[in-house]
Image (cartoon, rainbow, N blue to C red; front, side, top):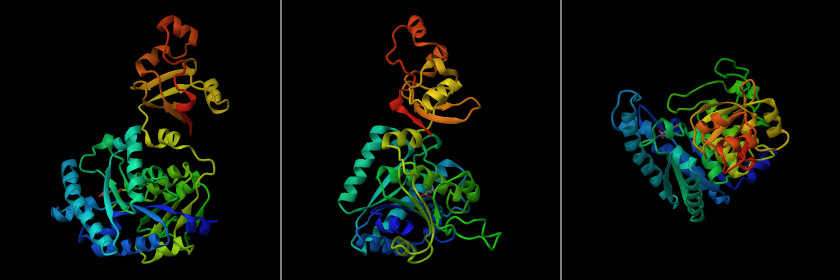
Length: 373
Ligand code: GLU
């Protein structure tokens, strides 16, 4: 199962972590980028399409600006990203030029993905680049991204790109071998798990909250990324990118890394986008009757089942639905602002008409804009 999946994956998003291609002491390490470019070129000769999500801009910029430590202040971090990104791209250009492969730079922020039109536009651009046989090199647009519009880490960005590009496989290359049965630094008998059928709470516990020095993620962000794309039918391979030739070997069916299988029942692109790309602007707390109507009877959300409204949102914004007890179980696009909804909550449709006049929509969240999580 694992081998077949890896051998057959045609369109692959490969995330390259900072620690693989840059260090604070040396800055960018172009020979490492060359080696990875060689391996990517060999995948292409097998007829595969590759998109790269590469970190390393900030670390490379730190070195170029001769900063003594990882910048804490945002403008300095962004300045480092700006000088580092051009260096990073230059190294990719050079590395792929040797192999007669063209590359293109794409810089994204969360805002580009949260706007459906921009999301679709980015999707078309990626498709066009792939059509030209180009390897897109994607990073977060760190220079302009402030917290509200940041994707935040490149494992998450890579999961977004895998969805954008309709990839068959997401590969996360880092300096870890994959997911272990226990922390291998503390427990020498810990073993690598080659295949994870489902990301259960137990699996999540194994990932812990580790973090490497160069990057922003740890195993936890990788798992989150894997979980996200699995809902869109895309499996994720976590692999040690420091080991020469491991990537092409594993993709030919050899041993190494941890493969997380995708869900069999996948969400469609728009519902996946609502559930996993958009960020909720508020919460609606529902009674049990409404929870049942949504989860087992496939209904839309009406005002009568809403007990409480929190947060501040406008019509069209993404909002989370909470069950009694506070668990988020659904997410959707609301038709009513939080201010108005606060007055409408608990009311039947007839009462709403009487009090507020005819409404554009009867549903607070229409079924088509609602995802059960
Ligand atoms: N975008 C950041 C950079 O290129 C890295 C973020 C990450 O590694 O998660 O430096």
